[in-house]
Length: 255
Figure 1 (cartoon, rainbow, N blue to C red):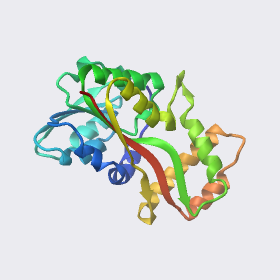
Figure 2 (cartoon, rainbow, N blue to C red):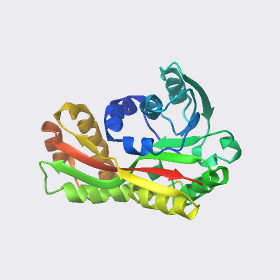
Figure 3 (cartoon, rainbow, N blue to C red):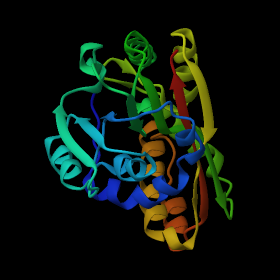
């Protein structure tokens, strides 16, 4: 699996991610939670959000394919009861042996970058070890901008198609990920609970809205080179809208 995420983008979105994730699902985690493996950990923002909500000492295994992000994540878990190790590699290569002694597997904004087969394999690996999963911020494919513009729906459709693209021979799930993950985990024998976790961005998030708009419109333009969105983007950046961007959090519990 490939992915390109800059530390600057991940840092910019961290407050919005923290505000959006479902705290309710955290209260439903089967305890005790002592060892957590964070797949595609990025800068470690999920760990910084979740660790203070868990009781007792914790050991986090930060897993990512980017050594620089792993180094950042390991160095930025400032909690006295938390220890950290790193695991360099592809999350799609996870095995049951990797999960020995693991109480919880987590990820953030990852499932939409996987294929249906990879999500099914992941569910089966967790089922084998009876390891609970908390997967946050999977893209839902819904965007509401205020004020609305006529081009919004066309760009949303093109963006969602881009998220479902074939990349290196892999058909990405994109906004189909929440439904695919629920089906895969239920098929593997898990009890699955989902909650919406939308970004709700207003004027205080102008920098994030602007960067997100550039990426949203850029992906749509890549998908639909027959259309021109330059004027639309300029208009949006001149007066950033309020934005509600849909995500879904998923908790899967075995046994």
